[in-house]
Length: 74
Image (cartoon, rainbow, N blue to C red):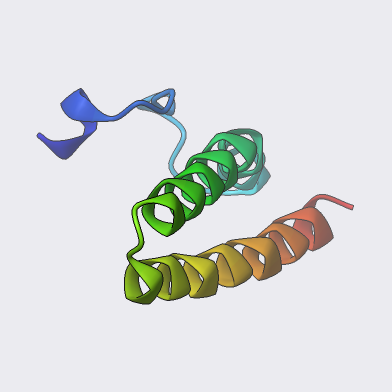
């Protein structure tokens, strides 16, 4: 299973819907965003501008997703 190798905290098995699931995603979001930014820096230092650009796009999507998650929880 993919989740066995994840660096991120697992969600409770019974947490499948509703605001509890949104809150769980919101709680895990900073770690994902931070890992993405670290990857951007790592590939940029390595000289891989194309991958850095792709990851930067992903980072922007994550920032937008955070706004959506926060909107549901307000």
